[in-house]
Amino acid sequence: MFELADIDPDTYQRQTRKISLIVIVLFAVLAMALATLSVRLLGEPGGNNFVWNLGGVLAGLALTIALVRFKLWHQPWMAPAVYGWQLKRNLMRITNIRHEVKARVAENDPDAMKLLRFYHLGLDQMYRLDGNLSALDDLLPEREALKQQMSEHNIPTEQTRLDPAWFDSIKNAPKQNGLWPFSHARKSRSITEVSRLPPGWPRRAPEPMK
Image (cartoon, rainbow, N blue to C red):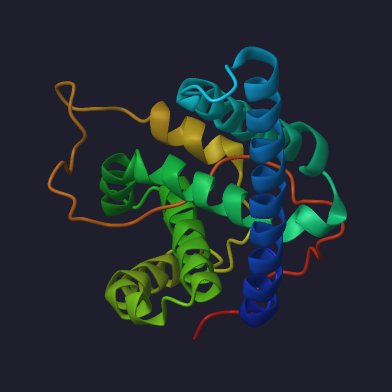
């Protein structure tokens, strides 16, 4: 179950820049090594070895991706990048059903309200981690309206943990004539999916938004 963690944006940005540099250096070393090896083994001395150089670079890219995904992914120092990737991937999962979610929110569906509130919290954190503070203003009206709606129905607003059952609730919600009751839901951004918090990361929830 994916859970929002309390992360300092400055620390996150510093750590992810370091991780990106490590991965770039790893790719450069592997690409140059494999390109050189392919030319020596398969190329022609003094000839046009562009194809073999390109093949070595592509092989270096594929090997880098494999090493990052299967070898480095679970290393503690990779935790910031893993968390950011999971957060954005989860955002996309709700983005794909945002119209259905907002339609159910308009019907005062508790699970839909919790899911949309989790999306707001996650999107707020993503903007802060990426340093995109100007985008927070666009989210404010919808966020405050949802908070008011949840308060009126006595639903806790601090939804920092994603429940997979919320997706099932949206999926299995009744439709009218094959369409969602409120198909005019306006544009919104969204978030989530189910995954584990990377090892070593705190499980303290983010500070409540005002």
